[in-house]
Amino acid sequence: MKWEEEYIEDLVGKFIVGEASESEVRDLREWCALSPENQKYLDDSLLIFERAQLPDDRNFDTDAAWDKVKGQITAKKTVRRTLIPLWKVAAGLILVAAVSYLFYWNLAPGDEFVYLSENEVMTQTLPDQTEISMNKASEVKVDYNARKKTGTIQLKGEATISIGKEKDIQWTVEAENLLIRDIGTVFHVKAYPDGQQIEVSVLEGAVQFYSATHEGIMLQAGEKGIYDKASGSYNKTVADTNVVAFKTRSFQFTEESLQSVVDRISEVYDRKITLLGGIGTCKITVEFEEEELDTILGILSETMGLEVSENGDEIILSGEGCY
Image 1 (cartoon, helix red, strand yellow):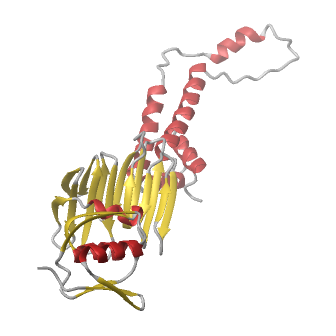
Image 2 (cartoon, rainbow, N blue to C red):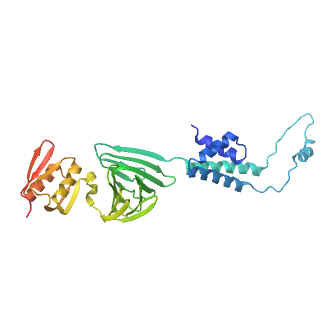
Image 3 (cartoon, rainbow, N blue to C red):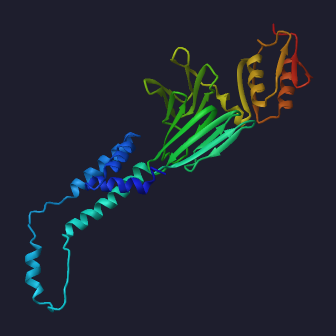
């Protein structure tokens, strides 16, 4: 490949000492134009080389020195020597080491992971023990660099992210043109490409929800940030703890309408649930902890006096309504 590490190091070295050809200089300029990091790498290498140039105030007359000692050598033996000042050797070694160090720390790629959840919930653990739980039809691309202590999660879909306990890596989530910078521990992002909004719910800690052109909003634990794609506006509301139910299958509803309850359950268990008889506005307070769908429906039926029936894949809850 044109931009292999060895070739770049060779280009930089030749350029610094003035031995690069015109085509090599063009290649180097093209490489620097690819990213600000590449240009910084060259600038840093030049700076190190300049600082390595120790002052050379002494004028070495190698011919005179050789004339002085050659009389002590047998006349029949001819010796040719090239004398290189030790400081130049040291400077060269320093330059090579420094350039290699800069390349390793600033330009060497980190690790990349790609995860795709199609028809099932998926949980992946990253090297720093950060956990990503993805809902169905979601895609995640992770760029992880332990040396730079940075990580980027590019998300399409829905995921709950729990940062590793050591918190050594500064994580940023990218969702379309928005960024979520982690300052805390656990947060949830819903960002389906065909959705009208991008939602961030903070369960523990805090995050900054923003874009490259807007400072956005700061979200604390218990808060939910909503970005409206059409208006470009940010809003805050109370976080819904049930956003992680796709992973935990645990729910907590307080004076919630039955319609909202069955909508959430239907989404998590991937079953269509229809309400009949004007019961959708009935309020209910109930908790479910990793229950099977049949158990949940049975509890709702007993609690609210509902009848449960099925029509193919559709589940129907019917009753007389609320008074």
